[in-house]
Length: 94
Image (cartoon, rainbow, N blue to C red; front, side, top):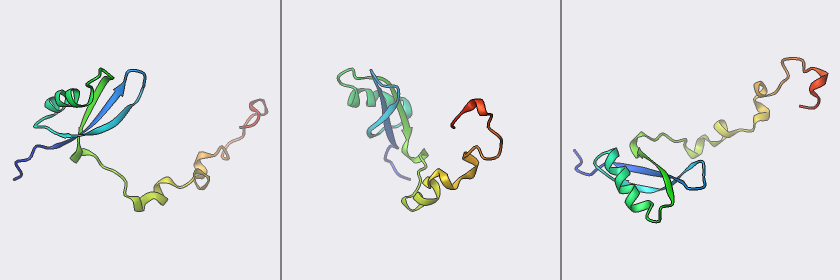
Protein backbone atom coordinates (compact mmCIF):
# COMPACT_ATOMS: atom_id res chain seq x y z
CA UNK A 1 0.00 0.00 0.00
CA UNK A 2 1.34 3.42 -0.95
CA UNK A 3 1.95 5.88 1.86
CA UNK A 4 1.73 8.84 -0.51
CA UNK A 5 -1.28 11.14 -0.27
CA UNK A 6 -3.64 11.22 -3.24
CA UNK A 7 -3.08 13.75 -5.99
CA UNK A 8 -5.72 16.48 -6.42
CA UNK A 9 -6.23 18.64 -9.49
CA UNK A 10 -7.00 22.26 -8.60
CA UNK A 11 -9.43 24.55 -10.44
CA UNK A 12 -9.89 28.23 -9.56
CA UNK A 13 -12.61 30.65 -10.66
CA UNK A 14 -11.24 34.16 -10.94
CA UNK A 15 -12.88 37.39 -9.77
CA UNK A 16 -14.01 38.36 -13.28
CA UNK A 17 -14.62 34.95 -14.80
CA UNK A 18 -17.53 32.57 -14.86
CA UNK A 19 -15.60 29.37 -15.44
CA UNK A 20 -13.03 27.54 -13.37
CA UNK A 21 -9.62 26.92 -14.91
CA UNK A 22 -7.04 24.33 -14.05
CA UNK A 23 -4.15 25.91 -12.15
CA UNK A 24 -2.17 22.93 -10.93
CA UNK A 25 -2.01 19.86 -8.72
CA UNK A 26 -1.13 19.02 -5.15
CA UNK A 27 -1.06 16.08 -2.77
CA UNK A 28 -3.30 16.11 0.31
CA UNK A 29 -4.75 13.55 2.74
CA UNK A 30 -8.37 14.58 1.95
CA UNK A 31 -10.44 17.04 -0.10
CA UNK A 32 -10.89 19.57 2.72
CA UNK A 33 -7.15 19.80 3.26
CA UNK A 34 -6.64 20.04 -0.50
CA UNK A 35 -8.94 23.09 -0.60
CA UNK A 36 -7.06 24.78 2.25
CA UNK A 37 -3.69 24.04 0.67
CA UNK A 38 -4.92 25.16 -2.76
CA UNK A 39 -6.07 28.44 -1.23
CA UNK A 40 -2.60 28.99 0.25
CA UNK A 41 -0.70 27.96 -2.88
CA UNK A 42 -2.85 29.20 -5.77
CA UNK A 43 -4.74 32.26 -4.46
CA UNK A 44 -2.05 34.33 -2.77
CA UNK A 45 -3.21 37.61 -4.30
CA UNK A 46 -6.96 37.19 -3.63
CA UNK A 47 -7.58 36.41 -7.30
CA UNK A 48 -9.99 33.53 -6.70
CA UNK A 49 -13.63 33.40 -5.67
CA UNK A 50 -14.14 29.63 -5.89
CA UNK A 51 -11.93 26.55 -5.64
CA UNK A 52 -12.67 23.09 -6.95
CA UNK A 53 -10.49 20.11 -6.04
CA UNK A 54 -10.86 16.80 -7.85
CA UNK A 55 -8.96 13.67 -6.96
CA UNK A 56 -6.87 12.92 -10.04
CA UNK A 57 -7.77 9.22 -9.89
CA UNK A 58 -11.44 10.17 -10.40
CA UNK A 59 -10.81 11.93 -13.73
CA UNK A 60 -11.50 10.02 -16.91
CA UNK A 61 -10.21 11.48 -20.16
CA UNK A 62 -10.30 10.64 -23.83
CA UNK A 63 -7.25 9.15 -25.46
CA UNK A 64 -5.53 11.02 -28.31
CA UNK A 65 -6.32 8.07 -30.59
CA UNK A 66 -10.06 8.61 -30.01
CA UNK A 67 -9.95 12.05 -31.63
CA UNK A 68 -11.68 10.98 -34.84
CA UNK A 69 -14.71 9.13 -33.46
CA UNK A 70 -15.36 11.61 -30.66
CA UNK A 71 -14.68 14.95 -32.35
CA UNK A 72 -15.69 14.30 -35.94
CA UNK A 73 -17.48 17.18 -37.68
CA UNK A 74 -21.21 17.44 -37.14
CA UNK A 75 -21.96 17.16 -40.89
CA UNK A 76 -21.73 13.40 -40.54
CA UNK A 77 -24.28 13.44 -37.70
CA UNK A 78 -27.52 13.86 -39.58
CA UNK A 79 -29.57 13.96 -36.40
CA UNK A 80 -28.12 17.43 -35.74
CA UNK A 81 -29.71 18.89 -38.86
CA UNK A 82 -33.40 19.83 -39.18
CA UNK A 83 -34.04 17.54 -42.14
CA UNK A 84 -36.65 15.31 -40.52
CA UNK A 85 -39.41 17.92 -40.23
CA UNK A 86 -40.81 20.83 -42.20
CA UNK A 87 -39.71 24.33 -41.26
CA UNK A 88 -42.45 26.97 -41.55
CA UNK A 89 -41.77 29.76 -44.06
CA UNK A 90 -42.03 32.40 -41.29
CA UNK A 91 -38.83 31.03 -39.72
CA UNK A 92 -36.66 32.02 -42.67
CA UNK A 93 -33.12 30.75 -43.10
CA UNK A 94 -32.05 28.29 -40.45
